[in-house]
Image (cartoon, rainbow, N blue to C red; front, side, top):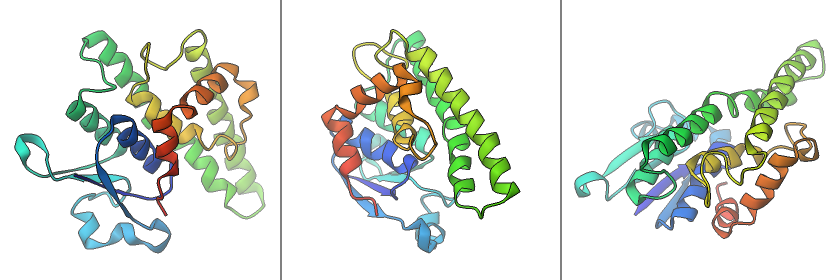
Length: 209
C-alpha cells in the first residue's frame, strides 16, 4: 500500500493522477498546507523540505518501506515500480525525462509565481509580478504548443508518460494563469485528450483537501 501525503495543488494532483493511471492501491493523508501541517515533525521525517507531495510505500525495494519526496522523483519511482509510462529505450526515456525536468524547472515555478502575485494587494508590485511571470508562463505554453503540434503526447506515442502527468497538474490551472487554451490549440487538444482519460479524471476527483 502506498500512502500519498498531499493537498489540492498542481503538484499534489500530478501524483494522484499517476497513481490512478498506474492502478496502484493507495490511501491519502491530507497535509493541510493552509494550516502549516507541512511543518509537523512526523511529516518532516518523510519530506524534509516541508513540501507536498510525498509518498510512503510499505512495499518498496526488496520489500522494505521507502519514503519519497519531490513530485518528479515520485513520478520516476512509481514508473520504475510499475514499469509503466517511462520507456526502457534510452532515447525514448531521455525524451520523457527532458519534458519532466522542463515542467519542474519552468512550467510550475513560473505559473506558481502568477498564483502568488494574484493574491497580493493591488499596486505596482502586483502588476509587475503578474506582467513578468504571466509573460513567461505564456512563453512556456507556447513551447508546449509547438512541441505538441502533430503529436498526441509530450514525449511518447500511443500513450502518455509521466511527463504528461506532471504537466497536466499545472495545465489544470490554465484559467488561473490567465491563459485561454484557444490561443494554444495543440495544448488545448492535448488537454482535452488527457482529461478524457478515466485514470486522469479519477486522479482529479480524489479528495485532497
